[in-house]
Image 1 (cartoon, rainbow, N blue to C red):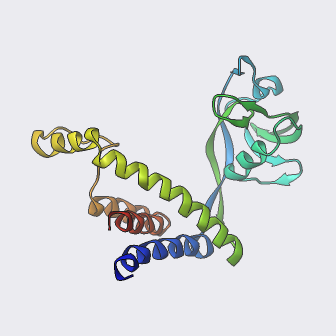
Image 2: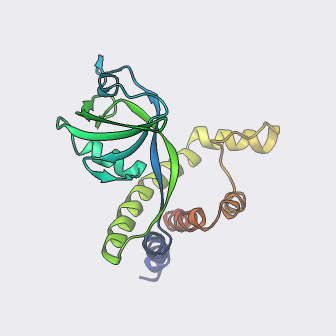
Length: 212
C-alpha cells in the first residue's frame, strides 16, 4: 500500500492542479483568424473555397453566437458535419455572412471547412465552474497521460537514448524536439507566466508518478 501511495499521490496532485487551472486561471480565448485556405478536401473543392473565404478573414459569429473563440469555432464545426451553419466574418471592416456545410475530412477524421486558423484578437480568459472544471481537468488528465506515455517511450527508446548520447558527448546543437531538463523547461515556463507553469507542474507530477 505504501509503495502504491507514492505514485498515486503524484497523479492526484496532477489532477487537482488541472482542475484548479480551469477554475482559477482559465484558458485564453482568441478570435478565429483565417490563415491558409485548403483548395480541396477529399479531392473535392473545400467548403471554404466554395463559400469564398479568404486569408485574413476574422470569424465574428456562428449561427448567431457572437465572438466565438478559436476552440469554440473548431468544436462547433466538428459538431456540424453535413449540416449547414451560418458564419459571419469581418473582411477589411465589412461583415459578410455565409452558409456553409462542414464535411468529413478523411485524412484528419473530423469535420472541417478547409481552413487553417490563426489566433486573432485576444478576447479574454475563460474560467469554468466547479463541475465543468472537474470535467475539463479529467479530459486534460487523460490526454496528458497518453502524451506522457508516448514521451517516456520516445525518451527511453533506442532513438531517444541515442540522441541523448549525441547531445552529451558530441556537443551537437540542441533541437526543439530534443529532451530538456526540468530546470530548463521550468525557466521557460516561468518566463511565460503562471498559465503555462501550472500545467507544466501537473505534467511533471504525472511523469514522476509513472517512473515511480
